[in-house]
Amino acid sequence: MKKTLKKIGKVVLIVVIVIAILLAALLIFLTATEYNPQDVEALSVPQGSGSVAVGEELSFLTFNTGYAGLDKDEDFFMDGGSGVNPKNRKQVERNLAGIADTLKEYPADVYFLQETDVDSARTYNINEAEYYENTLGMPGVFAYNYKCNFVPYPLPMIGHVESGLLTMSGLTVQSAQRVSLPVPFSWPIRTCNLKRCLLIEHIPLEGTDAQLVLINLHLEAYDDGEGKAAQTKVLADIMRSEYEKGNYVVAGGDFNQTFPGVKQYPAVDEENWKPGVIGEDVLPEGFHFAFDDSLPTCRLLSAPYMGSYETSQMFVIDGFIVSPNVQVNEVQTVRTDFAYSDHQPVHMRLTLTPVS
Image (tube, rainbow, N blue to C red; front, top):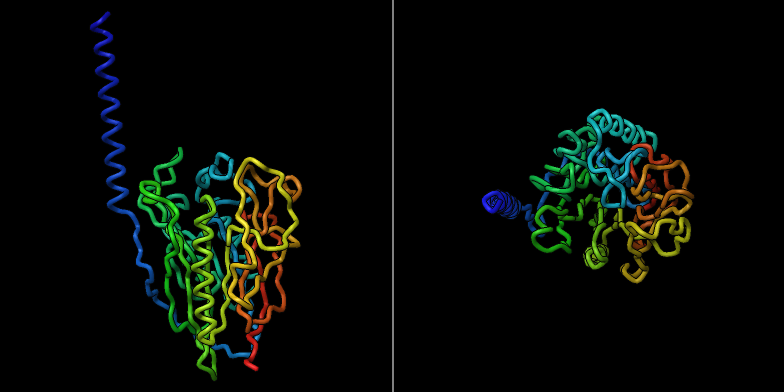
């Protein structure tokens, strides 16, 4: 009996040692291959031919596409659901086609897209950025928001991820930069977590030295709130600096924070993820939010969409911030009933106002 117990003990010890070695090897691998971008990185710009001048009206559309994997039938483990990756390639392809059709239905001079995969296991290595650019016939600039050789959780594991922000426009882009945002996570969680950024483009304005500055963003989601606050401060500082140079600034995307004055869609889920709250006091003087709270822009992924805004937890966290020299003419949340993503797009028309 004692010999049997000793043998079992040895086997258990060997198993524990092997697991420990494998975990250590995984941590070493993730640390050695961790994505560590520079604070500011120049990005290649497409050969756009469109021009814009002060006084003209422009249209924008922001859409968190949920990597074409978070359609109305999906839930997600980080939101209280159980889903991890899309079920199959056809599901991703169907959602991609639906998202592209939505973009075509609401044409814009500038598209801000978030959660766009370019080479991820979860989306069967489809280059979604390339798909949108080819389908709409519009060039784009891409910046990584999430790049990890292997995400080892949950089960099934997420695996390899390359995802980020895509700004598409036919306008002539003078320069584009990826600007890193503060990372609120420490080692080892940081190694396989998002490294968020701002995708900033500068577009010359005809007949003036001023530029139109476009800022595509997707701020922190699953933090304690300090990450969102730190990232929002960086955004505000950049917007202020650009406006002080005499430029026109339009920032848009998924803030993962509700906007001031939004009272619709009260909490029906007190247990799972909640967005932060962004206040007017974070904006540079004269800047203002542009959003539409007549419809929600995001749903909680604790369960599949039940077809009602009243029975599912909804939020308004997608929209824009514009500088004082930008006049917003219309903001409209596009109703898709979350058919292809856990977000609904927001369309905006604005005018670049002349200096008086």
